[in-house]
Amino acid sequence: MNAKSIVVMASGRGSNLRVLLDAIKRGECPVDVHLVISDRADAGALAIARQAGVAEVLHINPKDYADREEYDVACGDAIEAAGCQWVVLAGYMRILSPRFVQRFAGSIINIHPALLPAFTGADGVGDALKYGVKFSGCTVHLVDDVLDGGPILAQAVVPVEDNDDYESLHQRIQAEEHLLYPATLKRIVEDGFYIKGRRVIWRV
Ligand code: GAR
Image 1 (spheres, rainbow, N blue to C red):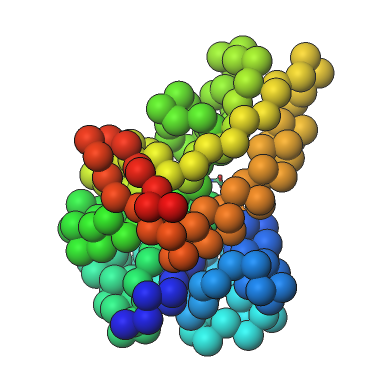
Image 2: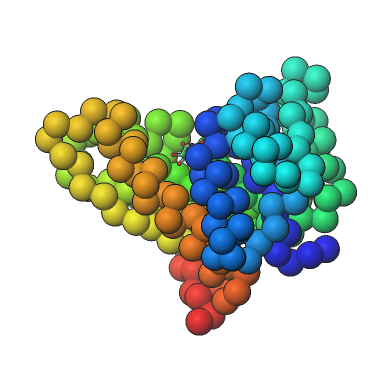
């Protein structure tokens, strides 16, 4: 198993995957995206991965499996066969089964478009906007069995402007995601961390 080999799991446009692949190409992020998995055949992330020459690009269709757990076993088997050390979620919109989280315990990383622990769940951007916060942002965190609840690796803050709508706020948050995710992955593989209580303590 290569300590720097990762799988990216994505359901959507794939802009986080794209900037990560670009950062790797520029030598700014020392990981190897060996495998990309999507639950959606039409995910932009799949096209981006194929175009970039990612070694294995898989659409694994949930409809081919009896339930969430079986689906996650298939994804997990593909990840293990590929020898990936880190499971990186980038706009992956399925809730992971406890068995999958257990299987890759401590090695699953997610990016969420809000400042956790506020606005967990599927619509972090819209919920923050509706609530009326003046600042939001993004969070990179470890995944455990609580939805959006694992220890926090990194966060970035953005202001919410009076004239923001969903799109403008999401765009501002995504600009920060695109810097924060590659930088945090670099730190994970180069420096490492340990967990103290709920806190992530970086080794450097
Ligand atoms: C990102 O903003 C990410 O934070 C969010 O989905 C978007 C994916 O964008 N993830 C979640 O909401 C997870 N709950 P992308 O497909 O362009 O990378």
